[in-house]
Length: 313
Ligand SMILES: NC(=O)c1ccc[n+]([C@@H]2O[C@H](COP(=O)([O-])OP(=O)(O)OC[C@H]3O[C@@H](n4cnc5c(N)ncnc54)[C@H](OP(=O)(O)O)[C@@H]3O)[C@@H](O)[C@H]2O)c1
Image (cartoon, rainbow, N blue to C red):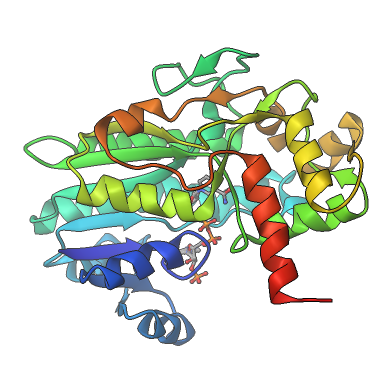
């Protein structure tokens, strides 16, 4: 297969393109600079200079592609999340970038599959109840409307034997994710830097398992639609914090006071503090995807163990 990828150079993109290149697919990826192009070549990927914000530049980049994986994003660092202006480029990538890719793909023809990793935190607070893509999204904070708009563009692409798939992915964790190391550095000081009550559920996903879900959606006969990609067993925050505490050799973690979290992450607080016990069963029913890390107890222990092996004392 010939596959066009955006956002190939970092957390999710790298393991996805690595798996595709290893499986013998031809991968082309949007490149924005010479530095970018050099990274892509090292990954065994052909760089395609283009801009998500110029449809005409996307047409030659997409010509000959069977599939598009739109993984680009510009999520601001935690300390800037509270400022709406920090989300502008991310919103543009999701809203305008996805729309332009759909338009260019339909214009050049031949693209059969379009996969977009959306975000699982769009659901309303659901307490202990299991939820999934059958649940109507909440009125999310302003920063999540653009991901719902991108899902609409993906649905518009679907039809006439073309597949459009949105994967609502949980919060990434794993050694590849800078957010993981940030969380761990607070945990080593006894702090849990995640808002929400201790009895509420948080839906994470191991990065490599998110990557294998993207590959499964591409290579298996998964029908068009929206699916949830999260751990098999999302934990309550209290249990997750205990697992991290155990992994870093502490008795407990102390959550940052809610008021402080609200000040630090502003409007994102409303999305992140909700109780979301999300099930991945819809995706498992249409693919043979199986996460290698079933829950955060296993995941956080693995992260700390890998670091210990990499940096023995
Ligand atoms: N992080 C999470 O917890 C999480 C959770 C759920 C879903 N997701 C989704 O998963 C996907 C991948 O996230 P990630 O964590 O892998 O992101 P990431 O590590 O920040 O990588 C972002 C990628 O997007 C590219 N990019 C940034 N701005 C761009 C622009 N204007 N035009 C084209 N490409 C641009 C970057 O390329 P350069 O190297 O050129 O900067 C990089 O390859 C995104 O759709 C994200 O919304 C993430």
